[in-house]
Image 1 (cartoon, chains in turn red, purple):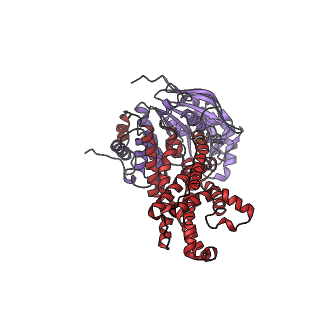
Image 2 (cartoon, helix red, strand yellow; image 1 turned 90 degrees about the horizontal axis):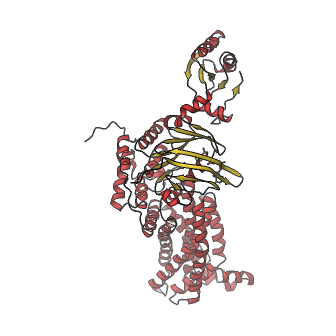
Length: 278
Length: 324
Ligand SMILES: Nc1ncnc2c1ncn2[C@@H]1O[C@H](COP(=O)(O)OP(=O)(O)OP(=O)(O)O)[C@@H](O)[C@H]1O
Ligand SMILES: [Mg+2]
């Protein structure tokens, strides 16, 4: 036992001296290990800031309740028929809204200065970005699961069963990995987390409504219908619907995956470049 | 163990612009290994931008720099393996706990889980944050956050540390602790590049100082040399009646030398080379019926050095200069 005169809550210079006297440097970790460490960081954030999850799941659940009970009868004849139609679409909406947070949390890191720490470390440079995907994927799965569970509680019974629902969720999560890079670019370009949030939702909100998530486009006027049909969110919703119904639509699934790959191919390199130079 | 080069930092003609802003307009630095080297300058002088180039966060537009013998552009990875950065914004993750922050850095630097935890606990203890180790950093005080930030820079003891305004916003006690840590680091042989806008901080810690203003080094030397280049000390006077400061300024200006009004509304100082002149000045104040609450005779402060070098005060406090 050593006597110490240091007040609690202050630095102990002698102990600092001892700590820095150890100049051993461990071998550098591999790329995968580094990315996984950032994944662990993402998980910790989900654990410490669960409000973020609440934010993103509340809106789609609200839409689920509103649309099903307010318009369901009018749009599809009965609330249960409408639930069958719209739930796979709401799954898409719920998870895609969550992708905006990838940009928001990246921007938060930048504005708070912690990115400077990461960028000054001798680590594989894309690791922070790739690692954050892991934390993101937890958020996507939670957001998607919540909407499916609420749907089932309201009487939704998809023909594809649990397998179909899991397949639909998996497809939407994979699509989100592609889309999240768009918001990462926004996160690196805009000045504040709020700006990223606003810009992100300004884009994703109308795109979601101008899709077949809520209504069958057959009833829409020509030009609008044409837009809704090519909107990737419609394609993804169609694919999700087909998987949940147990009748996979190969084309819609392939197009969704191709769009996700294209988004990643364009925006991932832009993200890494901006991350390095900002 | 390879021998360190004699110069830990060797920068020549560093330049960096952001749009039309020339943040750094040609900075040369020669920092001896093992020294605490101060980069002193007011807001917007280009301190942070210089550090960011030296720490390989951004590439210079022109010029070159070697840090611990490695080029910051072509051998940036080697540089990152030897230095640590404590940025101006505390570079810690607010949404993690203090311990998680240190374990994260330890893991990223290659420590295994158990070793990263042990090192984190050792540092948390040494830096007086062990009690708050499990709390989220966003609930930390400014002083704790700054100490954690410095601890994160020492998870693996670096050969060189960049400290960017490490005490801005800290109370005097926290500030003294940071200074103690910096001294301990230097004593252990780590080179420190310290950016600060506090003249006292550079004076207290630095072996050598570069004064920078508007992206350029305008003076360089030891604290003593810089003071000598200004050539005078000063007489500080605090009046009983702040309302008569202008009158006192006229008296001191005539009897002693160039007068500076201090931020304290009752205080003023006069450039003054020797004690006798100072005594005459205080006597003149008494003769004019100006009550004096206290007075002192100082060596020239770096504040005055800055004023003499740049023609404007280091910090934008509402003080003016009166001609004698
Ligand atoms: N990323 C950036 N984009 C645009 N301008 C910038 C950027 N970084 C710095 N500047 C500008 O460059 C100049 C120098 O900034 P710098 O941050 O290096 O100064 P500083 O000496 O660190 O100041 P302070 O004491 O306020 O931290 C300032 O005019 C600043 O506005
Ligand atoms: Mg700065």
